Image (cartoon, helix red, strand yellow):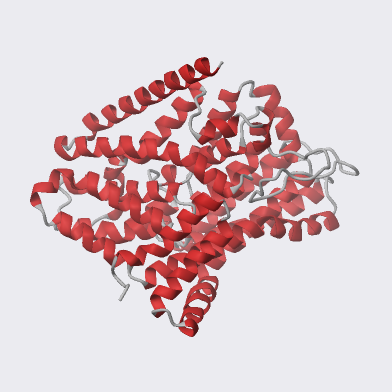
Length: 515
């Protein structure tokens, strides 16, 4: 009765609305899950319980891909805890205050680091967060702003990087064509990703904040620190707790942060290409295309953990017992992120079982059948992709649904530039919705990486993401008619920079009027 209709989107809509209204992410997600179970079972109690817990939660926690991500989370939390206990994070924070002199410099450094770690978005979020938290704190950058910079350099960068787990996923959804070639051709048309990067640099260089982000940046409570009683701030955070006592600890050096991070990056790259058959004769690019990111990240992170423990013991900053103590602490630090991910995956399974994907796919096919709208098709596909990814919390699932539809609409004609634009709009919309959604795993990871309250991250980031989405929508309308990226992309960049300047002027006027 409710399958393959608008009702199939209601569980996600309920969860997202409640999360934004109540600021209680766990309860909101669980209510959305229950709503999905009730709709699927037709209001039958026993069938609802079975669908929610057996078909939903237990199945998701049994999925090899999901288990691999959870293992990666725990191991990475442990590595960060080791770096912290060894004093590497504190040493890097001290070094950064001497070399990164301004808020602008700290933000630009975060963006550049995020762009350099383009292999995988999960890896990006947690690694950049671990490295840049001390820098952000020293320069009074709110955790909400740090979370936005991390999130905006995760999926938006991965989706325009030919060598990444995202490129591998996209190429797998294109039948009858060279997926990697199509992916590369689509990069200049991926307006949301490109304009988000332009927007980040412009915001940082002009030191502009607006909306809830400005309020967060002006509140000292958003910089994580202890209150007078030694307790945490009122807002709960997701991620690795960086506070440790310095008593009885050997003073660490920057090398105790740099070496584990470099080892982690190298190990994860090797782990991913290993799963893609690189050591069995496949080329580097093909190995990435065929890689299993979840398994590769587990191989890489576990190897990096072993090497890090040996390194800490060899340099005599931590004993073997201190290293082992970091294992349960690393797990405990990631429990909130694991819980939210579990609920988010279960909620996605509810919308899947109700046929949300089929419902949206049918809408897109009806639009594509109207030849009068062909010039507007990229912009329409972008909006549909954004809405679907926002409601389901998955970008990979979104472009997995939409890309085959677009390819079929154009008969797989690689010479048709409008098809390339529309496919890029699928990817851009998927990333945009994923970027905004509170139930997106990447958004959850960004909150964990920045140690920011998850709902605060979502609410402060949303106006920024919507600004980039609106600019991308206009640019896709232009691209749909001119069919040349070297015309539409510069227009989009100019619109983005101009919009930020207008926002800055408006914020400056508000500041003057409030005095």
